[in-house]
Image (cartoon, rainbow, N blue to C red; front, side, top):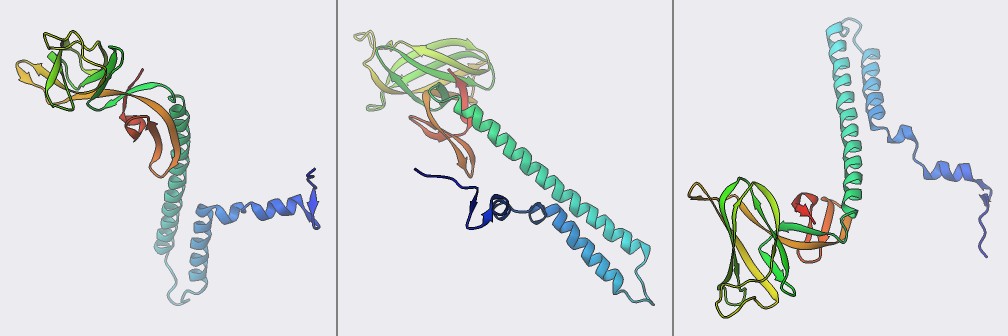
Length: 230
């Protein structure tokens, strides 16, 4: 059985903690910069030429520089603290998405048992919106979904696999491609995006680029890439 002692080889817990923890004076960059600046200023004052001493304007100018440097360093530390806090909050928000379906930019649609979910995102409202489904193997259009007029924003949609072909009521299960065509005032809209359904498999929180959402199909994305959570 393992045991834990309060002291090892004559070294107390306080000594161990003192060795492991870095002293605040050594890690406080703002204070360190201030001390360096003041040391230089005092040294300059001590070694000034008595016949040509520093005037008040020079001393005031250097003190003003000290305040500026100190202020900038404190601002940087504050921003780093806010950044860390934001990343922690973002990570907690992201982990709540694991297992959920999400709509992200993409042109893939998967039909399973005659059911599928996809989405359309419009930057502006449209008088007419159509979704054209194509077979990825042949490149031929196999279905047209007329959505009519739609408001701006991301909208989730369902498709039952209905086909344009006269001899086929529904398409076979499998993967398809689709594109979105929208019109406003007789003119085609270019700010239209096709949205694919994907699922959140996991979250990576210790990446250099921040929190990453790992999707089962598309791979790693950011929270900003998610258009809607289903």
